[in-house]
Each structure stands twice: as structure tokens, then as C-alpha cells.
Length: 157
Figure (spheres, rainbow, N blue to C red):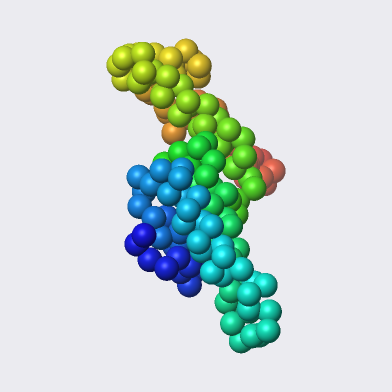
């Protein structure tokens, strides 16, 4: 165990640091760390000490959040890849897509396929050559801009 768990900022502390474990911790290590810290920081233990009760509640919530992510294989792989943010509800579809891609990549690894094979699979999914994206593509780029000519200047011609 690397620390006592519970940093001062839940979003800036890694879930591994919050639980005081290493990134390569087993499911059993995660559970053991969680149980130990949950018992230590459970708010009911500090109900008679209001000065510490707020801190205990905050740490307990951090511990709960860290455990809920690291104990779930899919969430943990997304978190490790830097793609999981439990505070952002807008990314659910993207997370589902990335979980599917990670699953496909894991299957590809097991089959011994190469990176080129994975790229071909990606190209088949999204279409095109998978490599060229024209960020400067302007659908109106081939049209000439409008010139506003006032009636008085048109009459002068």
C-alpha cells in the first residue's frame, strides 16, 4: 500500500493513489484496500465528531468512486487509457465505442493479428482509407463569395 488513501482533491488524485495501491494491483488487492479504507473513513465512525465528519464523508466518497471504477474491468481499462471521466455524462456513447474498440483490440492481440490488420478493421468500420481526413474541407469553398452591390453603385456603371 502506497498511502493512507484519500487525497485532498478527488479529481486530481488518481484512483490508485486514493486506494493506496499500484496500477498493476489485482482485483483482490483493490477489494482489500477498499474495505480497509472504507472502514477507516466511514462517516458513521465520526458522527460524534463534527470537526472530522465532513472530511470523513469526503474521503469515503472518493474511496467509493475509486473502487467503483477500478473494480469494474471495463471502467478500469477506460480509466487507465485516460478515457473515463465519471463526472462527464456527455461521453457515454464515446465510452461505449471505446470499450468496444478496446475489446476488439484485446481479441486481436489474442489472435496474433498485426496493427495493420486492426487498421484494416477500423477502415472497414468507418469507411474510406482511414488515414486521410481533410480538416480544411469547406463545402462552399468552390463557390465565389457574394458581392453586395448597392443600387447607386450599380447605376454608376
